[in-house]
Length: 164
Image (cartoon, rainbow, N blue to C red; front, side, top):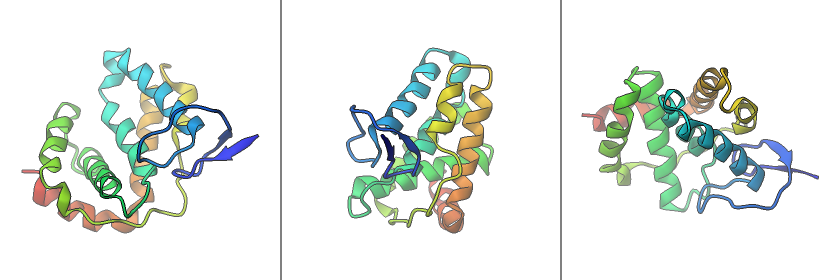
């Protein structure tokens, strides 16, 4: 039996398993995400774009908008996607940027998630650890950023104000 992920909308075979504490997902979608992470943690080359994986997944699984952790998670991960994809921040600088953003996370506001995501973890997972891993992850991150286009101006202003 298939199950639709409540976060990203991916339709995957239903499985029993863990899910994230506050990011709304199905167990199968969380398992696909963890498969991608496992490949990245086992390869220095794949770790280069690790933040894109984390940011895309977090932005696609916004959770309960009344939960402050969810609001901050979506905003912070979208801001880091903005820095990576629009401002061309170097991959090795993205964690430091995220730490700076974290100091101002309480100023983030709740955003309305897009009705649909073009590419999800289920698209990337079959390529985890293969020569196509990086390109598929980048496609996922760029599509996720585009999916949130209604909020690009807000995220850009917020990120630019807090990046320095």
